[in-house]
Length: 294
Image (cartoon, rainbow, N blue to C red; front, top):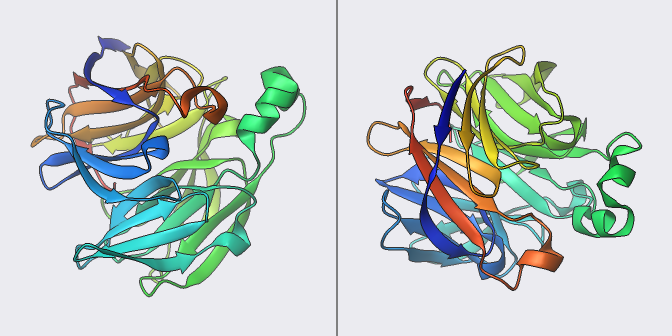
């Protein structure tokens, strides 16, 4: 197993999510600065790309190049066209709490999840031990067509997060954060999902944002520790990136897609981090390039 140490390249975020490498820059959402931002690969030149008052999360791009962004609190997918933001799809019917992560396929299908419950308030009320004392709450994984219509809702997903699509477009991976696993689905020609299966079951790893590499392995942020893990199908851990704070999402970027960018923060509780600026972006060079989406 290979071990790496990440370097801080950007400070002053509130809570970074959904990192994506796009048009030569790292794009990401910041929940509590209420915007989608981009930076150069070295962490310089941060730009506000679009304001999202409803709390941005998952990002992707439609086939025509329009930015699609989850607006978490009001449970919508937004579309940004020529600087104008509109509602692409309202998924509130399928969300028990905030909408969250999303991946967009090359055909324009969106795969989006939600918290399913108020995680921050629950942890404040009963703590981690209380939360883990019973089976985790579940919610839906929602499939949205390129026209902005919900075409499928898959129930019983334990905090869907960090979704990925294989390079050939036939497999969707989704992290079930509170079940410590990475699950997989087959993507049919119409964009719908079938054949749910466990791709990797991990021990006490809160599987959060992730990315796929050319060896078919997945880099996954561990939301309960300052680390990202490189995982094979079946659950073998083949690499570790140590970060300075808990890791909540990661993305392979740069021209050769061999720089792993990691979004870190002291924790994810809005009661503790929304009004401070302690989140960071950290990065490290790794051996195998990224593939697939995002």
